[in-house]
Image (cartoon, rainbow, N blue to C red; front, side, top):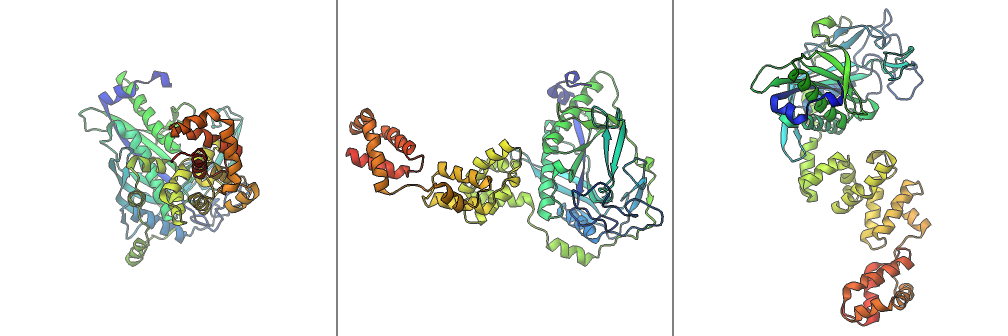
Length: 502
């Protein structure tokens, strides 16, 4: 089904209520894999970070990564989950080339965390509660690269390359309960939930959760039920969606696709689907297995995990302030409206602005530079704000120079360009480029006299009482001094020369 075959979103919502389920996989930032001592560091040669255990060779025995368990407990606690007193791993059996053992060590009916929730804030400030079914520990698969086809997928490829460096990296899979009642805002809820979860994971320090690097991936399950019905429809599962915008687009497309199929008298097939970034569509992958198809059974080579209650409470005491609560506190401290705070969140600038304020800048100045000049630079370079080669402390220093009158906004923007270009810290860039504001009357006097002489008609207007016209003369001086003059002092000098009260 193509985009043109869909029913309109409005027509879909007029007849059906969407039901979503979101499964988010988070790659934990441990130094070693979940069940062996192999490194998890990125960038190694293919298959260089493997051993008999993560390759599933006979006679090898797994050992649980303690840091992985600790991270799982922290995530569960932050999601208001119950933490199991006793849980164990299971073997999830299926064959695929990127599974060297032909099974995935995961958790099935005994997850480490269950029955939680996460409150998410939508763009208009409404808070929507997403209930969590479970959060369980498992391992990642290897990476398949399909060569020779037009799409990069296995269909049509001439051969496939396998890299098992990623096989065995610790994952936490967080599964929501069915999300109902969102109505037309279901795609927005999906995006907001994944965004809030990403902020939470980062705040806990258990993963960088960079979706573009595969450290956090979302499977979007969606079904429709006719208005007035309480029976869920057949679901589809759009796999491995790796950006917030794509999560929203995938949910929206599937709502329209399901409605088109159902409205034409067809039936939804329970299947996995692939999301396409270019047009926001999904296409069929494979028929979706049920749990029994995986032939789960308890992992015989691993002992159960029984987190001591005292240890769990110790971890609870170390949890940071939850991101939504922190944002609300910062919003009040910074004195910004909810919509502006949402824009700051969407830009990934909350932590950067907070760090800039901590480094001494006023909140308004910190917001101005990160959401203005630096956001523009990030957009032009195709990078996120936190990837720019400038620190919050450097931005705070630039703000301090502006506040002290040593830089104006135009010069400050040039300093930012210099810092981003690797020319040094702000003071070094100011010195090298000669960017300080000129405020000395002697240095400014000649430029002021030149501007008055060259714009006699404007000077006469000012003498005649049209003081607002002074802006033209100030602009002329700024041009002469390459933007380095103190504009306020220039205005004062011009009015003094013309004998006009300011």
